[in-house]
Image 1 (tube, rainbow over the protein chains, first blue to last red):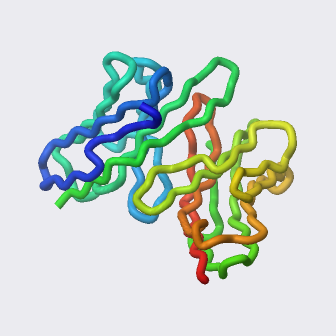
Image 2 (image 1 turned 30 degrees about the horizontal axis):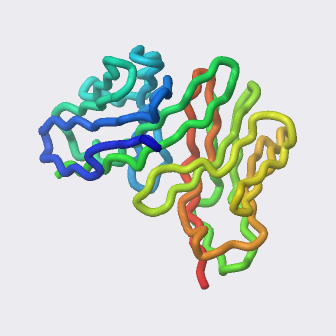
Image 3 (image 1 turned 180 degrees about the vertical axis):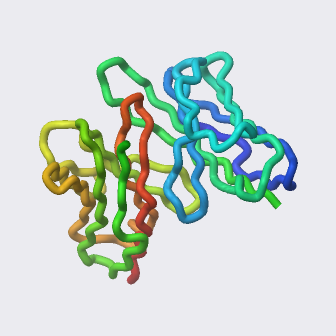
Length: 116
Length: 112
């Protein structure tokens, strides 16, 4: 596709429910990032993939958060046993990651998660 | 660790007035700096970036930002704003490995 595509755009989950958020990066983009953006805040880094390898997961807030990118393209962010503090917009981003270059990072429109 | 501070959470301004959105960063290494814009219910769009070279960088819609190493700043300016510039603006610094560290954002509200 032309841009980073995320689904669902909006998700309402009951507390304790598991959710899965999907990201389809720009075709050919090697690097993929997940960010969490709480209301009125800047995006906070969650995790980073280069192809299928998860190189940095230092931003995942707890072991209830899990991300995967098994074939190096589509990625899924899974949140188990959701809690109210998980309510946020989850942004996916991708970039080319050409060696020796600072590549532009392109963002999707986000998945808006509300936990009730 | 690198960090970004946006000094103003909200900036109200009248149409056709000039505006400056302030951004300061902390870093002990070479920096790559970015401004992203977020319109309501949309994702982040790159507005402009500083990687190297000229310290003044411009966007296609009239915004500009100046990298000032001595003041560790990367303020965003526009000489005359439009209603359509109303949005949230985020300053970011790129960390080693490629991830971006964002500021808290500045809400620009342009009034007629």
